[in-house]
Length: 379
Ligand SMILES: [Fe+2]
Ligand SMILES: [Fe+2]
Image (cartoon, rainbow, N blue to C red):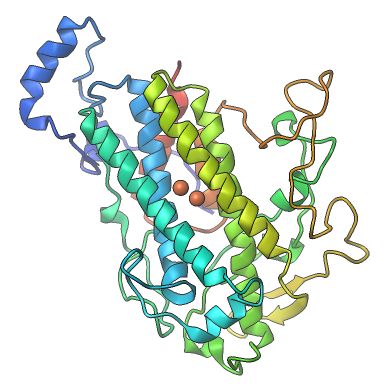
């Protein structure tokens, strides 16, 4: 696992990954306006915040980066297992992988398509809003260096994220079922799929070899394991977004930026709720990856030693739990929502999942830098 030690030695290094806002040509005019308005000098060596506070711009930039990364991963799912159309172009689909995904729900391809389009609009909107306020935007194209799947149906282009060596944290499953624990209190939670939370697992077919032995009627256990892995990864990603937005919203200054964060965040929760429901339909099976030798077991979550409040698959509504203080009554809430270190926590969690395996040290430093700036934001 990569860590976040170090950082860009020269902050100017990262300017090359940030694009100046639309008023770059009028910088002199902007400077005058800012001084006249009595705002702190913004146009120093760091990123431009334009007419936003430094903190608001930093929070939006971290969210823009997170959405670019989400779009990249969802695009890979859509190319192979979604619906390729004018709304979400690229790729030509893998009918066998799509069939395996549809074991979780007949509409999986539509949901994958719609989740992908949503992330794309989040990314484009946040960057466009930053630019409209004269603030620097985020561009990660420099880091599109990771390989595509070689399975038929995937585009052959550079990627930001790696879906072929994931270590999926499935503790969100039990976290949202607990009636007494909350990660904001330091509590920890059991994994729903313990073997998925260790080792490296692919969530998409890597080559057509991963489709061997499957038919349109019956996916092989290996291909079903890949589709099941995707099903739990969908929930893992979207519960992260569900927590990230309310966590960062607490340190936003402007009412308009707050409105943006409060309007996008709940769509992540809508995604999460859908994926939470579908993951429970993953058929129980055990597979040994023929390429890596890694074993994964999807247990029957409704039977002993699973089952009950912590695992039962139809318990997809959040259980009420402790919130703010153990002296207050239990409340049904998003968890976690602590704002301290929220951006860095998200960056670390995504990194620990293996989503960026193969990325350059420069990438990790840039992500860390964006997260640090967002976490330094104060209302
Ligand atoms: Fe999003
Ligand atoms: Fe999302």
